[in-house]
Image 1 (cartoon, helix red, strand yellow):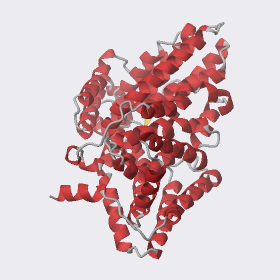
Image 2 (tube, rainbow, N blue to C red):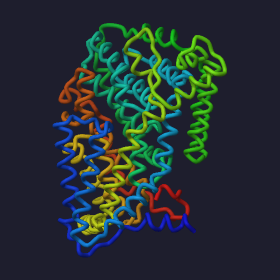
Image 3 (cartoon, rainbow, N blue to C red):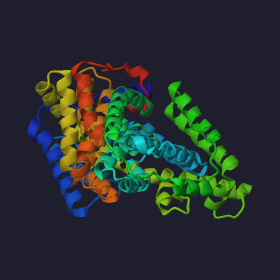
Length: 498
C-alpha cells in the first residue's frame, strides 16, 4: 500500500489556479539567468558544485513565488522529499555504474576494448574508422571528454601526418565519442536523462536505439564517402600506443566474456541494479585472474595477496584509480573515479529535484504544462518544443547537464498528459540536449573539445554529423509517429521510474 501511495503521489502534479503563467515561468527565467551568469563568469563545469547551488537558488526563488501565492513551506519540503525519493533507483544505479567502471578498468576489460578498437584503423577508411574507434572507446568508458582527450588527440595527430583535414577528423571523433556517450550505461548523461524523465536506464538505452542506429549509420556512410575522396600520403602508426597498452595490461579476448554476459542480462531485461552488480563482481573476478599485478599496484603493494587484492578491488570500486603507462596520452584514459566519481552527478540530481519539487508544490509545473499543451496540440509539436528547449538551454545555460535537467523536469507532465511513455522524453533529451552541446563554442562541451583537439568549433561543426543529425532524427520519428511508445500501466513500471 505504501508503494502504491508513493507512485500515486509522485505521478500527480499540484494545481494552483491562483498562479498565472508568468509567475510560473519567473523561477525558470531566474534559474536560466543565474546559470548563464555562473557559467560565463565563474566558469563552472556543471559537476563541481556551483551550478548545484544555483539550482537551490532557483528553488528559493520558486519558494518565494509560492509563499506569495499562499503555498506553505511545509508543503514545499514534503514535495521535495517525494521528488528525491523518486530518484532513489537512479542514484543507486549511478553508484553501481561507478563501481563497474572501476573493476572494468583494473580487470583490463576497457583497455582490451581500446586495444582491439585501435587495430581496425586503416588509412584508406581513416574517417569512418575514427568514428568506429571513438564509438567503441566511448561506449567502454562512458565519456566523450575522455575519448577526445586521449585517443582523439592521437587521431588528430595521425590525420595531420596523413594530410587529412583536422576539421573532418574532429567531426568524426566527436560523432563517435557522442554516440558512445549517449548509448553507454557508464555515461553521466545516459543516467541523468531517464532520471529526469521518469524511466529506467536500460529502457532508455533500448528506446534510443531506434533513432541512434539510423543516425550513426548515416554518419558512417557519409564519412566513408568522404574518405574515398581523400588521398592519404602516409601510414597510420599506432604501434606505440598498442605497445603501451600491452605493457600495462594482459590483453586477452577472454575479457570480452564479461561485457557480453552483461549485454545478455540487459537483453533479457534483468533489473539494472542486478545486471550492474553482476558486471562489477565479474569484473573484479576477471581482475584477479588476468591482472594480478595491476590489482596489487592499485592497493600500493608489490605482490597480490588476499589483503592487497581486497584493498585494490575496493579502491577501484569506490575511489579514484589510475593506471600509469609509458604513454602519457593513455594515462588520463586509464583512470576511473569509482563510486566517488558519480557523486557530482548525484549531487546535481538531488539539487534539481529540490528545484523541481518546489516548482511542483507551488503549482508552477502544472501551469507550464497546461500552457504547453494548449500551445502544442500535436505530438510533433510537443517533441519540437522539447528539442527547442534543449537547444536553447545549451546556448544560454551553456551546459549539457542543465539542458537535460530543466526540460526533463518541466516536460514530464506534458508527455504524460499526452499519453506518451517517459522514454519518449528521455530519448528526446539525449537526442537534442546531450549531443548538440559540443556544437556551441561557449558551451562547456564545445569549449572543452575544441581546446583539447586544437580545432575550432567552426572548423568541425559541419563534420560533426551525428551531433546535428540526432535532433532531426527524433523529430522525423515524431512527425511520422515511428516508435512513439504510449504510456505504460503504472503498476508495470518500477517505483523509482515515476
